[in-house]
Length: 426
Image 1 (cartoon, rainbow, N blue to C red):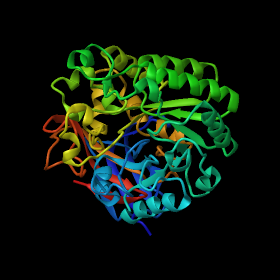
Image 2 (image 1 turned 180 degrees about the horizontal axis):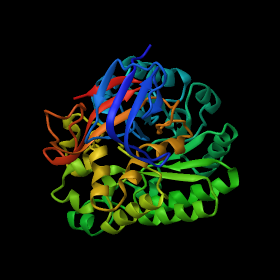
Image 3 (image 1 turned 135 degrees about the vertical axis):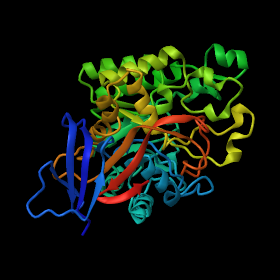
Image 4 (image 1 turned 60 degrees about the vertical axis):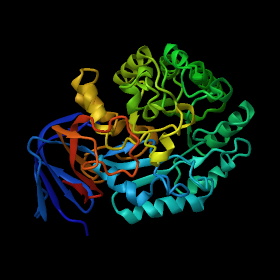
């Protein structure tokens, strides 16, 4: 039996219910059991003083690569679990581009079992849309659903053609599976490595135009109406694509979207000096795109902020810019970057936390991301005023590939509870 815990005197913010105030929170048997008034006979096994801190649901990350199986030289589930807990994340989605690919129940179960062994996080594997992510033959989606995959996608791998996309959407819809699309037309993206604009032109880098994203979004939206599929656009980066999604939502099409935290702060100018730590996919775009992404998050068009965590070994970032591996390690900067949006007045604090909790829970259709009595005791407690420096003494991910290295950020997790058990505390 899990311990009985009293979280005392914190500012409890639960965006799902609109709760925001000073409260005591009571946890028992892995669940939230009461607010302010203890249940009959409740005696806490231990107490967490949360005065001056914020207490909220554990974060739900819609895209984080833990690199296992197949890429253990970059990171492992056991190793990254420490960074996950230190980031306040209790649930995360693992894209299907592992090795082997998540196209069978055996691989999905392997990942879930390895995560369960850590006892600190819930990993939700996203099943492959096509076998081996080859883009042609559809995966056994019914078997993947039975193995616990709530969604299917093809990660960064392209589909062979729009007929395969149509069939995939139809098949997923027949099992009520969410389809996660990372929209990019491979022919328009070609071999680009940066946003097609003045910066990439000046630096002589092959560009990826925003139309690579918008054309892909337009195709999917057209086929959604035909197939009745539910689609989530992952890691949206361009303002024009956001406007297309907003119109589709207004028309009643069941589409949602998320954005990587770094896209809300960095822009194409951050690759100046050929900084490979800012080589990401989709690429960092222009300032106007960034502002539209922020507005869409504020207005609820974009439901969630994800980390898009991609840890790499040091050598992966040491080649010429186009030859370096895209992606950044970003678990522990997820909260500080979200809080910075609130500090800058872009979002209210409640809206920023909703994008990390109730927003992604709604995308997945899960009864998570809330603090109502009976909900799982997945809790994050953080100090919104604590400043800390990203570096060896504070960073727990095996990946050091972050442009925020040696930067001082504000907002630090002090405790994370997963199913009523202490997963992290400092």
